[in-house]
Amino acid sequence: MSEPESSSDSSDFALRQLRALLDNRPAGEEKQLPPERGLAQQIGVGRRSLRRALDVLEAEGRIWRHQGKGTFLGPRPLHAETSLEVMSSRTNPLEVMEARLEIEPALARLAALRASNGDIERLEHLARKTGTSAATDTDNRELWDGAFHRAIAEAAGNSLLFSLMDMINQIRQDPTWRRLREQARLPVKEQTYVHYHHQIVAAIAARDGSAAEQAMREHLESVRRSLVKIMTNAATNNSGGQQSNDQGRPAA
Image (cartoon, rainbow, N blue to C red; front, side, top):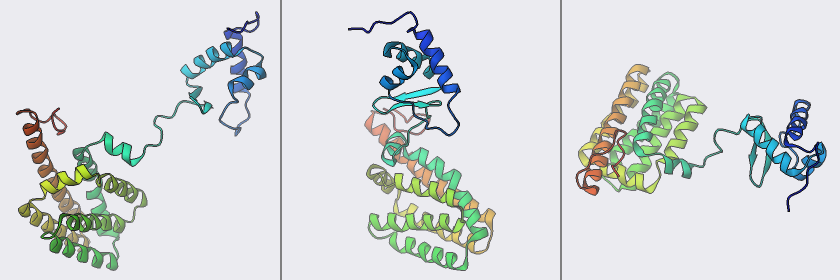
């Protein structure tokens, strides 16, 4: 049964009361409004009029509502906190490579400027390990390759860039993506990647930021080209000859 409304209990009256309430809230007060029942009683209106007024304020961006949690001041956040699992499902390997191409060459350049002697010794050791593991099992290759790139990010000395790099590495652990990368790691390509690793370390040890940045970029471009080839072949085989789309994702 709908609740009766008095002449003063209109949506317009409710909206004016709410506007006054929001305008007069002390700075620093809690950002969540009271539940609807209590709020309706506080400003002296019915809940139906209150909801209509709240609809207007939400459309204006002054409040936002989350079902089951309440009504909050300010505009709705652009995105809720996203888990790595959700992020992984929304992106694809070529987007990850684009991100790596933007971040890792810069990290290599910074590492050349900031790496300690101990950092360089560790990078030389990891570069050797990526070489000796290239002929062993795939899990071992992934392990040392990831450790090598992570060590460069650490040596760069930028905590924010390191956090971004660490997040990308966690997304790259998706089993489907690991299988795709393994297909791109042909023996002849693996030796090329190992060569780039040594080239990157040599540039960092020489404190040549430009050379380190360029070597990392060439290395990642080589990986990206291999992924594009694998994904394009997979798309062609799975769709009867269709090509991949403009972003390099397998065609549907």
